Length: 205
Length: 163
Image 1 (spheres, one colour):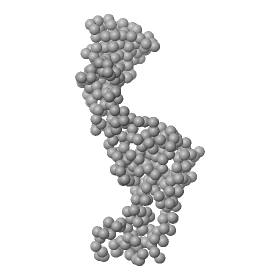
Image 2: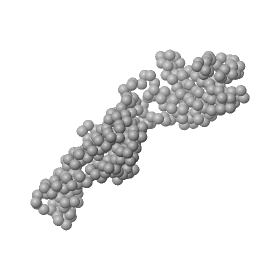
Image 3: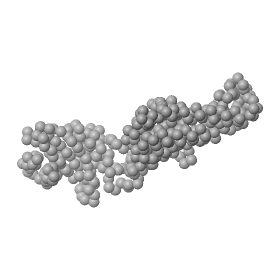
Image 4: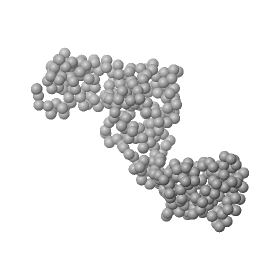
């Protein structure tokens, strides 16, 4: 059975799991945070959508939610937090300040978080209503299911798949037919090499 | 309200240190010669009739093209006497320097740093005159009237086409 068949089916399953277990990192800098708290609170309850846990470590989170104004001085911090997150990762810009800089047009405010990090979903509003955040989350979930999150797209470009090949091909199995990017022998599926990696490897050990 | 403070100031400094006084909407103000800035502040704090024991605010105003270009503005209040007064001192653009008030009211420390950061007025004798709001790499003083409104000084940006 060709691997592409497995990986397509697997991607569906993995992405389904991903979209309902988004661990979020709330990067809350301004007044939008007040409204964002309501998204967590029982009345709107983002936990219903599986995005329950705020993890205050970027290494444990999947979804970076930028809530509030980002100043030029904060930009390197935001970039570093984004860089520390494991792939695949998603970013939501909550409120106009995080999306475009909002009504701030001055020396200190950065015109939108997407100046330094890629953003998947923008939520307009000053502040947005909690329903809008839930709407954005559902939108993002649909996108995750289709494999269209920005880091999913990048992973697909670099490795051919945005799901870990180790999941469908345990290390024992080694290389078999129908593999688009054959990994080095004996280490099959550990880290699927991209075209660059394949080119540099000189074959079996 | 605080006319007594202005009277006291005029009595104590007859030699031209107090350039002008006034009262508007019940708030008294006095324009002080910049050379006497520190001296007047100490007097206001220590005199038995004024007792300005609470530092409220210190900031700066860019009045360009007027010369002197900047006004350093000080608000002080007396908890005991329940009166407040506003002091102003003009600062020249060519040499934007005025005495620090940190030894008089320690609370002036961060306010003077802010005025320095935003307007470039230096406070002579300040123990730690660094930028307080903008990052150290920032060039210029953003609240000056001649700072370009659209000017940005980014620390980081995404490369075009990057993730």
